[in-house]
Image 1 (tube, rainbow, N blue to C red):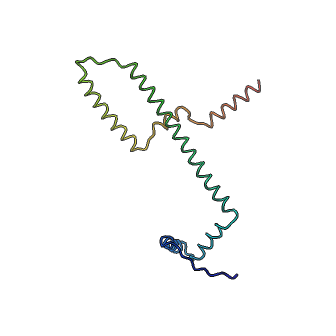
Image 2 (cartoon, rainbow, N blue to C red):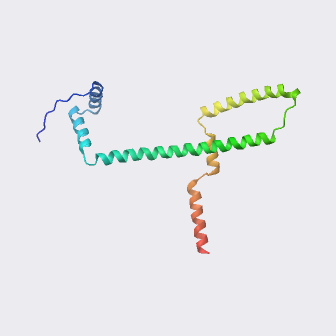
Image 3 (cartoon, helix red, strand yellow):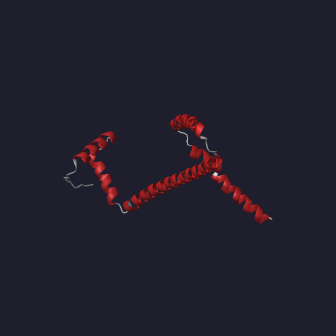
Length: 154
């Protein structure tokens, strides 16, 4: 098979990376460029790039949905806590306010310390709460299907 010789000019950074890849893979720079050019000129290249982009977008969508779920859980938890504190807490008399502030500062310092330990261990309270609410999403769906089948049978 005959080949055509081309003299190409590429950016120095691309040349450096091409040299590294050729050395790492143990192949010639020409073969790497030939494979890249074949891929680029292939009629499937556009479809392959589109599929790769779609896959990445799907992954990003799932990550966004998890973030949105976590945010909803956090907002609801905070709202419930605030409502609880505001409805249950009794006002502190003037004479005891300084002691209450000191106790509040100590409790806050303890809270921050516990939060730091929790985060360093890599635990997620939001994940724990979500798992408590919906331990196994597949079991929930399977249970609904079984209920539908029982309803149809009767």
